[in-house]
Image (cartoon, rainbow, N blue to C red; front, side, top):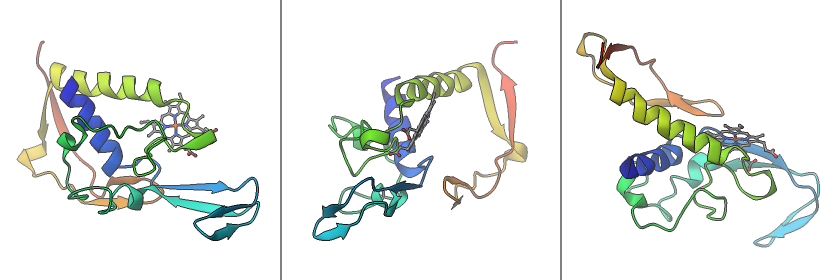
Length: 147
Ligand code: HEM
């Protein structure tokens, strides 16, 4: 279960549910010398932030171990890892979501054996709209372990 938590962390880094987030500034501000007037539409590219090689080693690789003894978490205070957003609009469902995701993913291989149709290889290439998802639909055959 400890390793599963690392896998979930790494999945939310590489496969951001909301790859792009669109917000509006409530008041005028200054960010690193750039004047941002009130009511400016701000587009936050989480996909790019979470794959930035300045923050992440081998950013495009799926490496759950990167989160071992790593103080970076998804609470919204680390601006290089924001799967649930940050600030006043941070996702209020974060704790609930993580419990559901962890228990679902733990149960799926516990109760079932998973195979691709005809032993096909996984196509992990991705496509994205506002969210990142698999380019090719995954067709799986499910066999219960205990019947
Ligand atoms: C893995 C699952 C989830 C992910 C990755 C996720 C991610 C996000 C993100 C990125 C935002 C935008 C935050 C921002 O604007 O900075 C958001 C907002 C929000 N999420 Fe989630 N979320 C998840 C599950 C949930 C669940 C289970 C609930 C409710 C039970 C929920 C309720 C909300 C609500 C109400 C907002 C809008 C907050 C606001 O604008 O004030 N989310 N979520």
